[in-house]
Image 1 (tube, helix red, strand yellow):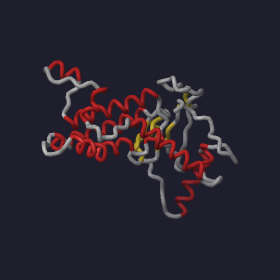
Image 2 (cartoon, helix red, strand yellow):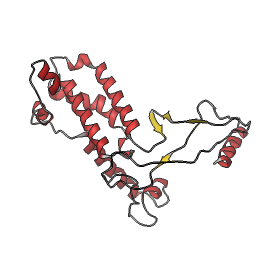
Image 3 (tube, one colour):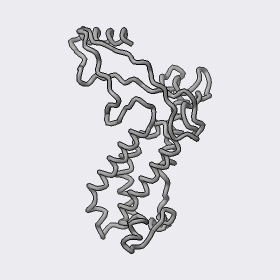
Image 4 (cartoon, one colour):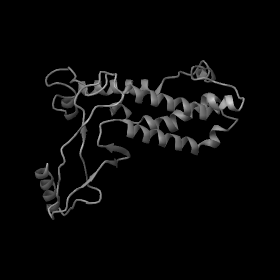
Length: 231
């Protein structure tokens, strides 16, 4: 790794470029050592042996626990939990910014849900199919969807409704507020469908495609063993 890093730094110098030491970081991953078979909520991990990479002037590359790259949170673990929490937090913030829209009386419930899916759901679900999520994380995604639906429809959670003597709407009754014409689909199901489409695209790709070589065994359409929970 040090050799490749030094080569990259050397090639960059030949064209007048330098590596930004403030933005260049080293993530020492924690690697799973067995599959979870869809039952584990916490991924087993083992620490990678400490290593050090240095620039040409002898300065070591900064080692971090997590880093934000292109809007996504990369951490030492392969767990989707940090990124999922970050996405849900961004979704809640955007929903709070649209509070005047949710309180509008001239907008139907169906239209509010459509706007929620377009303005908030798209932010949370974008490329989420590329993450290795556990069943617990899938349920957390659905729970966030229900909370945001309640926010858009101005429906109090059951506990709050009981305290304030309001109408109690349980999660299984939430669909009744959307009307028969609304095709409700849980967010985790959308993620799984998007993951299937991604695998199909990789399967149809040429044999020398880098992503296909990662997901499928050479010269066949047999997927490699998924290093995490079964979907």
